Image (cartoon, rainbow, N blue to C red; front, side, top):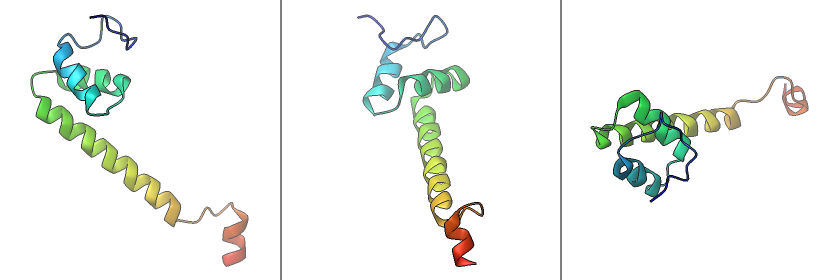
Amino acid sequence: MSDDSGIGSGGPSNTEVFDSLINMGFHPEMVAKVIQEYGEENEHKLVEEFLTYQELERSSQQQQQVEPDPTSSEYAASS
């Protein structure tokens, strides 16, 4: 089976872990990056890292929606 992810020789060597994480819906480039940082030995740890990243991203997006942009016309009208 060929690796169509575009990941070079620096990518994960354990395609089973890589494929498993991709099948969970994680982006291939992010999977390769997290595996490089944390290794492939603990798939549970990798999933925790992805879930933490997703939660931080979601919180950041929610915060941006709640806080008005002081440079926007909506902010000027509400103050």
